[in-house]
Image (tube, rainbow, N blue to C red; front, top):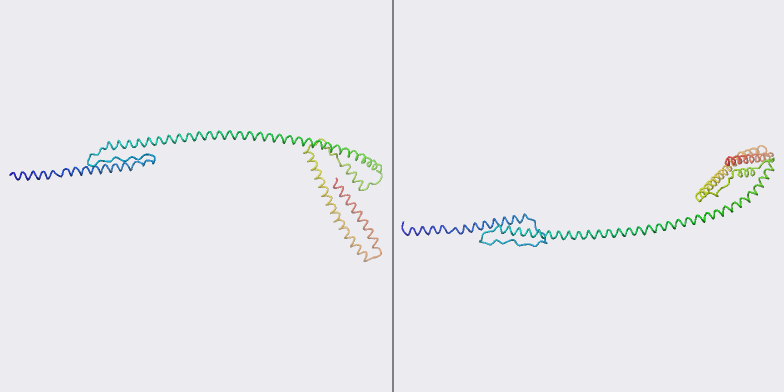
Amino acid sequence: MSDAEEEYEDQTVEVEEEPEPEQQEEEEEQAEEDGGEQQEYQEEERPKPKPMVPQLAPPKIPEGERVDFDDIHRKRMEKDLLELHTLIDVHFEQRKKDEEELIALKERIERRRAERAEIQRVRAEKEKDRQNRIAEERHRKEEEEAKRKADDDAKKKKVLSGMGANFGGFLAKAESRKGKRLTGREIKKRTLADRRQPLATDTLREDGLKQRAQEMWNWIYQLESEKFDFMECMKHQKYEQKRPRQRKGWRSLEVNPGNSKKENHRTDDRGEKNEVAVGIKHFFSVLL
């Protein structure tokens, strides 16, 4: 080979060896892209920090130099450790606040419990005083009522003693007339005298007196009702007795006008006697 050919080959070798820096730059760019993708993927997987955690800028990868993944990992660990310390501090601060609120709540509950106990004690004392006043008032009223009843009983006994003397004279007169026929009024008085019983209210209290008064009122109400029914029955019977007499009187007047007055007088007497007999019978049926 000639010298010219050797120089030409050397130039071609140098030309062929020149692309090596470009290949190295491409490899560095590829490594930077791979490192950036890996860094973005790791950042997407980690949760976003809270606003209270300070944001740290990611480390910048210098261009044209070799990537130090250990340094990146160390910085990331420092960042995570800083976030963890921040979260721990926040947790303990919140826990301290919660404990303070819990202590304040317990104190407030105890204070309210003491106030409620005091209110209940005062209320119980007032209720006790009220019950004592009511008992004293009731006792005073009972004493006044007993005194008033004693005065009323004394007055009643005095009146009844006077009435008893008069009634005894009446009974003596009635006994003296035993041979005579008793009238309806005398029979009624004797029957009522036999049926009357003393009230015996000396030993009765307020409830017993009220019950006795209610019984007497019911008995009077029953007697008045029976009296009203009896009067209505007598009116009806009188009307039913007058109708046939009137018809008979009209017929006798048509047949014998001269004897009509005598017949009417006789029928009236018989009707009155029948009415008296029916009234007495009904009265004794009610009483007995």
